[in-house]
Picture 1 (tube, rainbow, N blue to C red):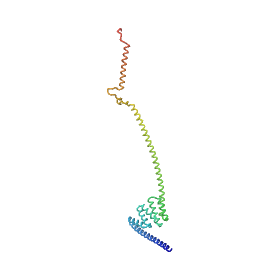
Picture 2: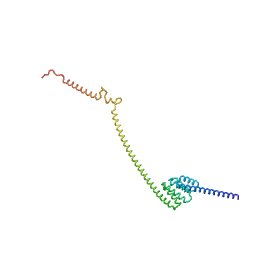
Picture 3: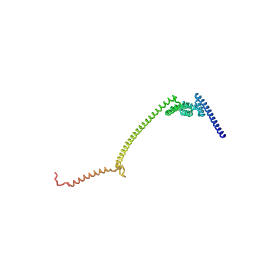
Picture 4: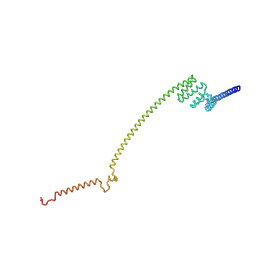
Length: 269
């Protein structure tokens, strides 16, 4: 029993010593981190941003309990308009901060980043969180009221923009319908004109077919006679003339038959 008790007591002592050692190491790391933060602050005040940025990063890596280093680095980024990097560091400061005052500052500046990015609804939430940690801060309260007003204005503008877009779409649709109707009318006109042209071509083709010679007969043979060859019309005219002459001769012959030769007994006067 005494042996078991001794072992338990030894374990408790060992555990306590280990925790004490860890605590001392954490305190030492925090002290080193704060020293680096102080160096970075000094460098930043002397416009040595690159050196200050490096020391802030080293300070952050030394201890997660140091909320000042990420907050000050975020502020440096914010002044240089590096808003994405600034927001990341403010967020980190808010997560590791133990004191409400530190959390308030971190969320207040996160709200400022959202305001810069015109993301007013998120700015409202960030300022609200800041006020939860320090309800007495009038600057945060003013920023919250401004963010609410701008968020409401942004919503109204988005609604108006959606209405304008819908109106434009309706107008485009109406214009498209008119254009399609006009195109259809134009197509119908062209089609009617094409059909009429086809009809005219058909009529012309019919006339041409009527004038076409029979198979085996050359077109020029029909229109123009060959040398020393009479046309059908000329032949017809000649036949009619010959028939007329023959009729005249026949009439004379008939007259002679009726009258006969003159009588010699007739007295001459």
